[in-house]
Length: 613
Image (cartoon, helix red, strand yellow):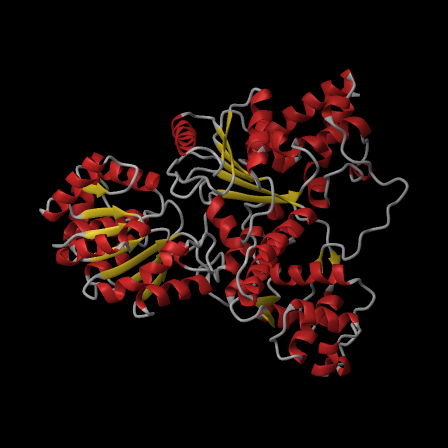
């Protein structure tokens, strides 16, 4: 592993005031100083900016940093100027004279760092002006924007692929926090024709507690969540402009300070909202995805998705805005069948060729698998990016693991033995060459009579029709559980084909078992628990009991250093107040009490209920 020269450490100390490099910075700086083209994938908060700023200050020729947002350019340049580093951020949001003065300093050699948008950089006038300066390095920030595989593709970024021909002496560097294998390959191919190095320094953000749950109508889940975190800054991501305004208005009416942010607002309104959010503690931003890129607010304590995001990459990018200071933070995602259907409509109506549409559907499938996962959520997230809790080991990334810091690790869902069904679908994968997607494999096990089935001869396989006892909808959800459970791998870059992982082979051979969520909706018993009661419907005695239960929950949460909702959500406590269970069996009928929580907390909460009776 290359090591940066002592002079780089001197710059780190004397200019930026840090005593040592963070993990990963040293080797990237060493490569860029040596002139090696690099694509660097580092988690948010890992110190990406220093990795190119230090080589830029050590170079004898200027460095151009390509940034997607003027606000981001201004924030970065302000930080550098505060450290005593001369810098130019040239864009349309600044006065013409300020831009002219900055460019004069660049030509005179007084400024080595130039921030430009991709549109400004790739204009004929700017390219002509840069040629005599012979830049030492071009840095593409938020590099996922260059790839159609990425979460936030921008056509203007594609023009940057010309830099390697226009400036053959320059080193090309790209940085992003979000890129799966296909996106990384695409970025490297476009920027430096694959003639460089791809450095991945992990996707794990262990300080962020991951959680997801099915969405109920209205904003009750959001309000319960926000009220449990008074005084904390958070982002609430909404699907539409109208929803951002409705959420912000509802929060403000409830006495919770909130702002709306979306692309339909005037530029000065968006800027004012962003500046307030950056400056005021405890403020909530209800926003579309127009908000977030480059937001350098260190103390965002949670990101709440009211709707399913567009892909795993987009989700990772968005939750990465929480906990940049390394302190505990949270990510909560709500999802529903309606969200999934709407996302699929967006994909179909979004344009692009058939191959692009197919890839986007597969990426959405991966996110749905994450939402419906039955095992460690962090392990599922990392596996998507080819990593595991133990590091960058592709084979380990397919094995189930537990992080102990997500909702599924702390409160595993009720599962049923689905080894037989897993073997059916895995066998279909193997017998068809591990190259078909879930849809065709499900047609095989359900015995679908299609032309494709007859043409391929797959209606003659031993696995044809063996799973007809379940509807296709159940098999579709089950296939996602095989992926999220690490038994099957979906190759998004190659038509979405499913292959069997080492963990899957162990199940197929009968060496391991596999459990999943209930494959068909359970028959509703007459004595099945009713939906959780709203707190407002409680009588005075029940309301007093609720206060006692919340106090006990707060005590237990503090002992375990977890959010209160991890013990039990408010709706579950309200249901306890209505039912007043007296035994552990009674407690099992309360909405939201699973087997693990029943065993761990049951006796404690029953004692509170009996005392309040």
